[in-house]
Each structure stands twice: as structure tokens, then as C-alpha cells.
Length: 341
Image (cartoon, rainbow, N blue to C red; front, top):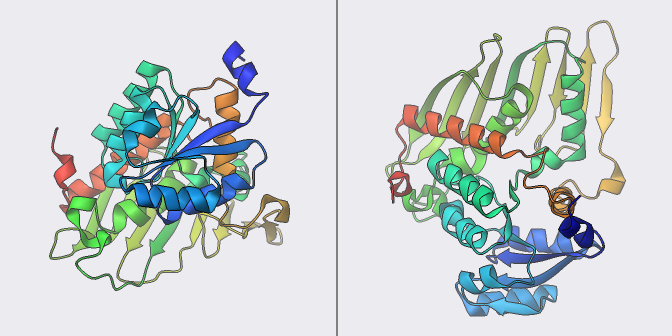
């Protein structure tokens, strides 16, 4: 551990929260419960929103602009919780100012923007991680360990879905191309990330979608393929509530994950010739919706002087964006932010 990392290990990690919406509030509520975390500042483009958020969570400083938060030298890590269309600008601002960053998913609108953020983090020597909380979930980590250890043999297929019933009116952000709307980036990132957690980046991508009059995907299905012969079937929707389940089938067994696969309460391991074995979440880990696991991983890594997390590696984040870009190319969804600045 570096001298700076050793010094930080003796004190709380100081957080800044950039944006004040629902996910920012959920994350702040979990941070407040961690004894080694401190929220020292919050920023919004509307000072009134920042001040209300600060009052709610006992935060000392509230800024009415992003630049002030990025420049606050008392902040160790900024949690970027803006809509994803603004992730590149918000996270980039913080990295350039010398802050480490945890950026909500999807990490960026497209691969180009993600590569720019990774380059900035490496240029400035700062920690950067996508807030893919599924990867930090203890039960998901247990599932991955079982698969990696060969519990079900060689992986043959992965299936995962995430759909919301809606309906969402044309004015909703999920229908707005200027805000990166559609099912894929908001919801499909979970099934794709789940498949790639277990199999890595696919060698082939086939996809089909139903598009809205505005040009965003109302529902998308994709088949990802690997040279090993493995296939993944992933689906997302904003016009139909799906089971939100996942399964992994191997040459010697299967793992089924029930509703809410990306923050599961349990999963069942089926192995040839054996009784099913159920794995359940430890109550000590907190509610299934808790974001504390990703917060703890960020703080562990920052204290250790690491520039990225082994649980949510930057190359893995880039690989998921490559897949999402490939799916959008095949189904014909383009956003204004896809154009070069």
C-alpha cells in the first residue's frame, strides 16, 4: 500500500454526491449506515435540490453546480448519479479535477465515451468504477465462484431478462432519444452484464428490437455467442413486465436465479445425480436492494491505492459497452450523443 493509501486507511472515505435523484438518495442512505464513510458534499444544477438533499442526509456542503463539487479537495470519491446521458461530462469533470469516481450504470452512452473516461482516469491516476452493484453482491459473487470452479461443468447457455410493464408516455425519459432512452441501456445492461460476468465478451452478437416512434427500443432481444459454443439469450423491455430471472446451464448442471436476479435473495444449484442445493443471502449483508457492497468495494480499493476494482474491472465495463453498441447498431438505435464532439 502506498503512503497515501496507508494514511487513508486510518480515516473515513469522504464522498461527494453528484445529482440528487432517487438513486443518489438510495446510495446516500446506505453510505450513512457505513461507519467508515462520510458524505461531505452534494451538487446539483439546482441549488435548491442540493440544499434539500444536504438537509435530508446531514451533508455539510451543498453546491448549485458540478464544478464546485469537482474542485472540493475534501472529497475523496464522487458518486455520479446523473442520467446516463450526462455521465461522460460529469465523471470527466471530476476526474480532470483529481477526484476518484464511482459512476452509475450504464457507464456511458457508448463505448467511445467510456474509453474517454478510462483514459482520463489513467492520465490523472484516479480510481474509476462503474456502479454495477450486481457484480459486488455477495450472492452473485458466490454464483460466479461456483461456475468458475466447474460446479455445473462447461457453460453452455445463459438466459436473463429484465422488463417493466410501463406504459411510459412519449414524454418520459425512457422514450427520449436525447436522454439515451429505451430498454437496452436502462435495463438490458443487467442481462448483458450478467452473461459477460460468466462468459466474458462475446464473439458474436445478433439482435432484434421493436422501436418506438421516437426511435428508441421498446423491447430488445439479443443472442450472444462465444467460440466455445456457449450462447446467451438476453431480453429487455419497457412495454412488458418480465420475470426478471436468470439461469446458467452447463454440461453437468444448472443454476436458476429467481426474480430480481441482479440482487438475488437465493439461487438453486442443480447438478446431475444430486439433490438441488439452495444458496441464500446472509441476512447480515442487509436488504437485497442495498448498495453498500459496491460502496465498500470502492472504499477498500481507494484505501489500498488501487485505480480500479477487480470485481468491476474497467476492461469488463468497456466490453459490455462494446456489446451494447453492437446491439444498437444491429437494431438501428442511435442517439445524438453518439456523434463525435
